[in-house]
Amino acid sequence: MLKYTVPCFFLFIQILSSQFTNLPNFDEKKIRFGYFIGLNQYDFKINYNVNPEYSIKVNRGTGINVGLIGELKINDNIRLSLEPGLFSNNKELIFNERSQFTSYNDTVWNVKSNNVHLPILIKYSSKRIGNVRPYLKGGFSTSLNLGNIENNLESYGIVNNHFNKVNFYYELSFGIDFYLRYFKFSPSVRGVFSLKNEKKKNIPDNPWTGYVNKFFTRAIFINFSFY
Image 1 (cartoon, rainbow, N blue to C red):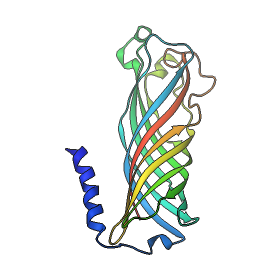
Image 2: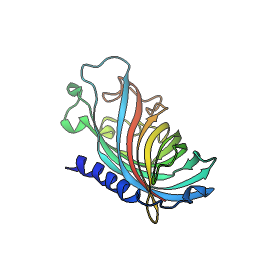
Image 3: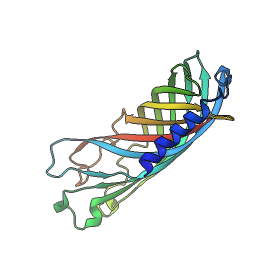
C-alpha cells in the first residue's frame, strides 16, 4: 500500500500546486536556510585478504536523519549546499566462521552509529516547470562516529576499537523541489559511499577481522527537506 500511496501523494501535490505559481521569487534569494528529516540504511562493502569459506553478513537497520541546510546561490541553476546533521543507525555484523568461536554470541557485533555528518554539495537544478523543479546534488562529506560496537572482544583480550571514528565519503543525490503556498518541500534520495578504509591499521590477528582487508561504508538516505 505504501509504495502506491507515496507516488500518489506527490502527484496530488503537483496537480494541486500547478494551478497557481507559488513562491514566484523564492529562488531569487542569495542565501536561504532550511532543515531536513529522513531515514537511512547503512551497509558495509567488505574486501577480504583471502576468499573465506563463509563471508560476513550485514543485517542493515533503518535509522533516522535530522539536520540543517544552508544554501548559497551561485547562479540561476547552481547552488552550494552545506547540510550538517546527525544520522543514527544500528546494524549487525554476523561472522559465519563459527568453528572459531565458543558461543553464538561471539559471532554477532551490534554496530551502533551516531554520525555527526557534514557534507558540502553542489546542487544543479533544472528549469522550473510550474511549481516543480527537479535537481541533482553531488559532493563530498566527512563524519565523526560517536557510537560503539557491542561484542565480546574483551573476553578474548582484544581491544574493542576496530573501526576509525572519522570517515570521508562522496555523495550523489536526486530530488524534486515542490513550491507550495507557504514553503518549499523537497524529497530526495541519496547514495553515500566511503572513500576511506574504516578498518584500523595494526589490528592483532583475530577470528573476526583477521581475514578482512578493508571495510567501506555504503548508505542510502531518504530525506524530506523544508525551506
